[in-house]
Length: 289
Image (cartoon, rainbow, N blue to C red):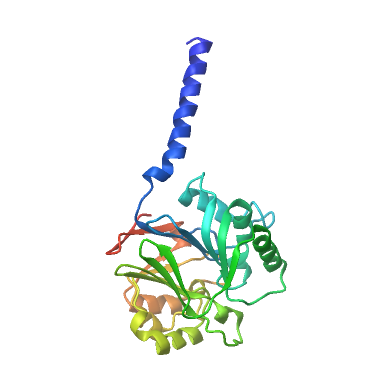
């Protein structure tokens, strides 16, 4: 094969690859998608409505080499969103623990973010300071989550805040934003690190609307969450535990796992399965990976 032909073939391959990459959005699924990202010990969730509006809830920990471009969430987002997508409509920080917000500054560095939502609780950590500086630099709309807030993601997908209500809490985890995602007949309950105290309050206030097909298990399966009555009322088909392999906290705890098993939930763990993704059409949710 002569050099000129080799060059032509190389140019053709590059052109075809470029067309495939740029055409990705045209062939993207028009279903609802939710992915629980494999970011180690922490939480990070990606949601996309049928109209393409996207929400990220928490960003997992920062990277091993600093807070910016090495955060584990970036590789996961590139996988789930595609390499060319550089916009996110809504980013939510459930509460300012490092294993939930550590990677969010890097999200703001790479993506254009429309709206940022948090519980309005500050922290004196460098991680929190880095995040809020990134929010300010991006000039994103800033909202404080309160019970009753509803976010329309388009295509019939809504995100309703069930907690916090604005009162004072003794524990930082209990300021966690609890969100119910609804699409058609399907519901997903995302609880951050909310403790049994908050779970009991939700049972009292929202017993009739808690049932959900998917439950993101509170506090990585710690014994401080997953009250048996709460789990029974939610009655999830799937219970997702976002947790790091061989973590030093012993998560998930056997007490929490027992509550989930007693509710007949299928337990899916990121430390065992990696990224966990579901798609839905409003009538059912199907696990894709």
